[in-house]
Length: 456
Image (cartoon, rainbow, N blue to C red):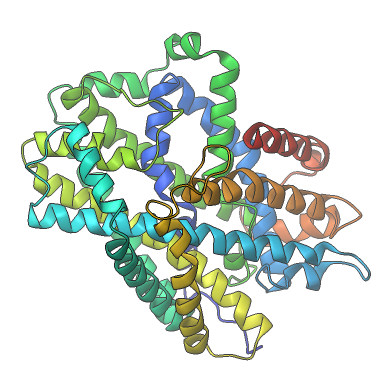
């Protein structure tokens, strides 16, 4: 393999790593779960679990990536002791990244389609959520439209990756992430000027026990735990790859806190957009957290845009922001896939991009056809897209995170001593020695609990 590329700046590393972590779930799922489970108190519980669960695993992924200077395709091979089998984790990671993109690229193309519908104004006459649900149903049942749009997303994002780390991935993602933050702040400021914004913000920002009493403490805690664990997409090497591209001048705990902070900022800001709008135009939060999905954006939220003054502009900017959030993740995961191939073959980036464009074009077909000719293919009442999502989110992410935790903290893996040295290398916030019992014993047990809770 050729000499490994590096980020040209720390800002590039921070924004790209955050971009990979920031997903569509930050924007639609977090606010609605927050609304269903009590508002501000849920947010506080969520942030607590984010620090207790997400932060340690993120530092472990980054440490493995930086110490090995490899992606998940060969990082365990480099760091494991002779005769160990930790390198088998590569198959979980590679599978997880491909399965994630099998449905995520399709959802990304939905954002693209709705952005153009708001730009040309063709959707503005449809006012109610029920009517918009029919529009959405017509789109997802149009296999050729989804195929063409998904192909465009795949070509564009792999094309960016083919240009290289600095000239392609870093350069483009930095622009998208900065634009994403600007759009979010602008939309949040606008939302806070709406007539019932104060009611929405009060619900969102002032903790009360009302939601907890209604749903129950265990339901609220388990929902916060699950959301905090999955929001960062840790466990399948999507974060570790960026650790392999950075120097050792800064500690990984500090860098992880910055990445996690940006991820949380986007989630919180999305609430500042959605809650004022829901309370002004939708009589409060009416979505059911047990069933909410990406369709919320195209039905309930779109009906709000279509009934508010300046809805075409707001809708266009919102879905442009959604495109940036989606594409930053797609590019980040595609870069991880690109790195797999660079490490395991002698092919160039451009050849790898062409092979994977063809491969992903085939792999997205089950998800696309799952809304039409393959709609009867179900497991436990879940269609193909939901099966793919469930496999990644509820099985591969927690299993992968458990492997990282055990590999970094036990003598049967890389070990606490090596992890502790790598994570604290450079200036910045350090992992304290007294945290070892928590990292080594408590954290794996909690991850197993999350796995059981999410899988059943």
